[in-house]
Length: 272
Image (tube, rainbow, N blue to C red; front, side, top):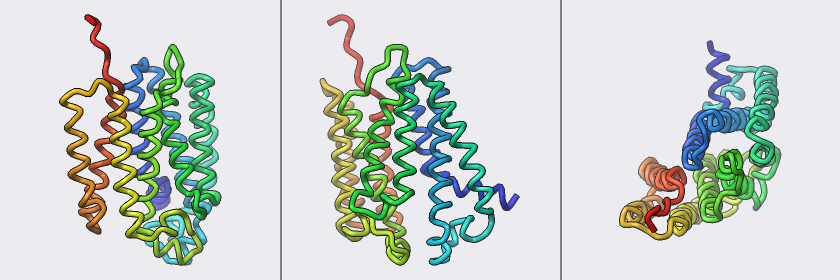
């Protein structure tokens, strides 16, 4: 049971579940049939397992060096062989599930997973650490729209808004571990900017995500002003405070953006 729990925690379950749930919302927004939408969600879920397991597998020595108590692999709760075997099985499943969504959708999703693995392999220690997140999140809406009966790329506001959301996710994810990462030689964009400027950038990119997503919903309705007002109210506590209140504000803004992504574009009135 200890090994099974460790294997599950090594997937980074929070982000994995969040991204998989986002794929379900995007599939619904793209009006995918249930069977095709289920394939998209399965593929994305398998891809998240690959990214999570390879991340901790590649970082095990760094995590041990700083005695990360939240890393089962570093603590010895699960073996590298078990994690490596699980990651291999997930990778094979990911390829099969992705191609089951259609060639264009499948290849796009494999590119998303490739971005995550490239981040794990070393991009996270460069100025370009944000790029895999931007490319992966920006491509995710198209994984759903390309799986539709009439495949098409997602509209540019959706793509750009999702990409900005991904950059925000990267910055937020890095904030709690800045000191541990610096001690083990990880120097991505947030580490080079420092905590204060990273918090400011988080507020900017998440607000930008909301604005871009709303720009794609023309004509705007009164209901669309609600997410804008919510984001504007949440940016100051997200940027100026620390700890749980800041994290709660950031998560709330991200929730607004995810809700906008899941709603898709407003439908035209057939009477016009």
